[in-house]
Length: 332
Image (cartoon, rainbow, N blue to C red):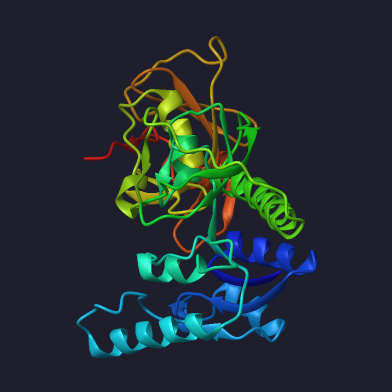
């Protein structure tokens, strides 16, 4: 089938590669404009654009798809995108973590006679965790399971009918990085199955999302990552893993701000609470035990400013002065 693909990050690029490898033809790619990143703040193409360039797929990078935008430049980009989509021959549109809202008139193009419409790969079991950050929010909430839904798009925020889904368990030591990779593979497999089924003329059952169990995965903000040690060890552990790799959980210890990358809740009896909230109360192999509002957490990997990720014990022992107990300051 001929596919218009819209997406931006690695999660989307993996699905794009799978669609191409399955023999479907991607005739047009939409992705966000190049962004400045890295220490040199150089313009960086998105992973979707990089793959499109590799495969000589035509690319559009509008800042908006809304032709009603009042900014002349953005309005012109939206007009160009609308005209290009209107004149392109394709069978279906696939949207994955694109980052722009699709107005109804764009969806209408994909629903013209003889076309199958627009399909979105969403990394949760809808209607749980609609929105921007379903992977991180699932871990932060302590969910036991998550998954991927292939959704027939409508104008709402992740409200369309589900045509295919698959579930997986969230591991006890799962981070957003590891869960992202597993869900990206699952999403790529599911969208290929969906497109293959459409090509073979199979009917896809469209299941409306239930009106109960709706939650929203708000975008992750950098200021969320500062740890409040008055929380329970379990809550802090979930946040450290949810915010790995972005934005990275952080805290100030003896006046120095460090990132916290790996952790686990200390088993009862391993170490007895014997300090104030935020105190380092003991050491393990490469880890440190920190007193929380309830329970003790073992942090095993940290990163000091400008440094690499290292074992927490090694990193923190170089901060301590030998007399004063190491203390993590709670979020104000």
